Amino acid sequence: MIENIVDESRRFIRHCPVGCTAPLAATAVVMPEGALLRCTACGQWISQATPERYSDSMREFDTEQGTAPDAASVQRRQALATQRIDRLAALAGCRREELRLLDVGCSSGAFLQAARMLQVPARGVEPAPSAAAGARASGLDVVTGTLESAAFEPGSFDAVTLFEVIEHLQDPLSLAHDVFRVLRPGGIWLIGTANAASWTAALMGARWQYLNIASHGGHVSFFNPGSIAVLAARSGFSVERVDTRNVRAFERGQVASPVYTLAKLAAEAVGPLARATGRGHDMLAWLRKPLDAAG
Ligand SMILES: [Zn+2]
Image (tube, rainbow, N blue to C red; front, side, top):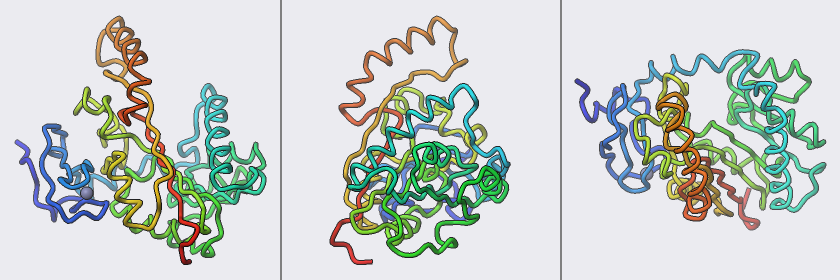
């Protein structure tokens, strides 16, 4: 029998990682590590995984292959990366070829390779040594370490990207301050993560694979548009926009194939409404370091 809220000294994440002082409450979503917790101020969801469980689950990322996409999805990824880079350049007010971009938690460099195809002067930083070495072996400019340890010059980037990273962090606020420092005033921070306030999360609860640390190593902290806005405000950023998209009711294999297909069609039909109301699954937050910001 798992207690609803385990002693905070046994948890990898003890308090709201976005910096709220409000208490955490148990949700009805029960994972093997205990009930998922919710910050009663910003709605952030927090896993009760222990530090040991967290470190174990992170090992899968330290390979030369890293999180490189399979051959079938390379083209789709390139199209997606192009869209994102073009929007970053437009928001930052420069041409692609001039966009000084930093990808934090770049793994073996899938996004950086897409940026290189577009002649974007992009760099990366990655704490997992083998993944970082794999990126360098493909000729990418990648530093091994954290954003803090890499000690880039203040104001040296026009854009910083963070894809599928922030849900792994014990202290995203500290990283937010580091991002703020390396961006020039007016620069853009793009965060990609899943939306815990999505219809997918509401429909699936504990069936939502994104919450499962056994299949998604290191996932311990789950944002929503509101908690992203709080993180932004507490680190000096303004929110340019938060986009969410896609709805799913089942993961593949959880129900018989005809049910899965029907649910998928229904989900596609409500997709535009989810997008319009901030209830989509895939979340992209575009934050700006104000032009008048010091440092
Ligand atoms: Zn909070």
